[in-house]
Length: 319
Image (cartoon, helix red, strand yellow):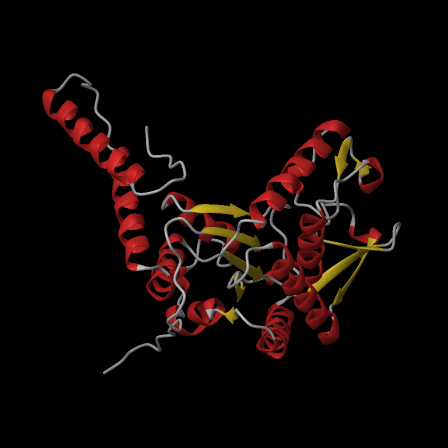
């Protein structure tokens, strides 16, 4: 007898190899997945604009990365003694103009260079809602806690969603390696501040727009991440205390499912060993001269060196 409905990720014919590069952009769930890629010592870059949620802003970010279009003072606003880009996450805000611009433009340069060598792109949409900054009549990625009276909130139309998705695909295919695989997901993070009904409406519009768009393009896939959390895990014990974000158990479950469908056997073994090494590195002792601890460290260093010999890129496995 089955007591839950399991949602499968379709097996991919093309596999992620240990030397492949993975670019991800979108909601905070994209960041959690990218953290696991990096922990497994795969080459991954995530969110050069910081966490952003809606397809229009993600399209805007990809276009800027594609063109390597640097920001200038005119692209920023000043608010409460900080210089802010409304296209970026609050983590880019600083009290100094040159620092904000430096942080933004360094990430654009990194993202442009990485995209040109990327084999896989993972895009995670979080919401269909968008805000217009009224003083500049500009659609924004983040409100930076500026008072709500300066913004107008609305849902992106179905056509706007489809146009944003299509434009994103075209830009990615133009800048990335030939045959780049583009994987789309809808974030399982619940935007409860929008309202429960509104959150479901927002997510359903994303899913509909994706299914109406990506079938027109080669090498574009939809991953049922939202469905795994909603219909497979389907329990609050898989959420953090805020009851909004999936917890580490849920994220790891999804990562395992994704890996089973998309990682080559070599990649699976490589990541599994790196996870074990990371766990072993957490072991500490007060007696650094204990012969058993010295032997443990020597064997661990040998395992790290074996992992380094498997790849051309630099891996970071140390204390």
